[in-house]
Image 1 (cartoon, rainbow, N blue to C red):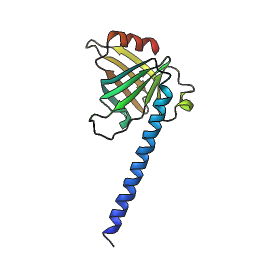
Image 2: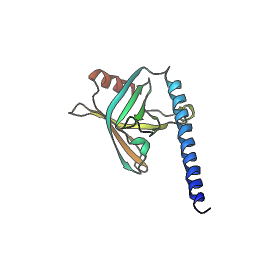
Image 3: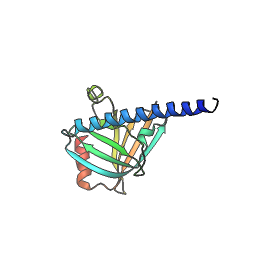
Image 4: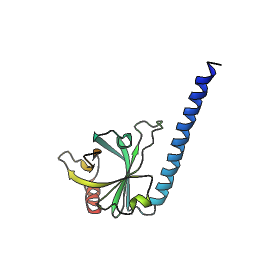
Length: 155
């Protein structure tokens, strides 16, 4: 009897984690179907580097992402580093004006943009977050000049 109880606990905890990830995955698919009609430009599989300062939020640490450019905001959806990884990243919405976005997209992380710049290596960077919680910088690699100009106009 003493051996069976740990296996029951492992099964219960594993079921809870599986159902939580399943629910988040369904919410993200619903989110993608909502923004599909709104997007102006989609740039898939961008190589990027993220860095955070402050409390670590693993939804903000990724190396590849899909970038959806809308008229007033951009949506960043992190991709797992390995193809067979089951890591799920919440969508990040970055905008100058975040009013109404929280009610429209409750599953996403919504932030206001602090700064954006283009460095000498040809990388476009976006900084956002609050000093109290987490400051985040995302550097997008392999973007063309046309895509960078489009990003600067939309934000």
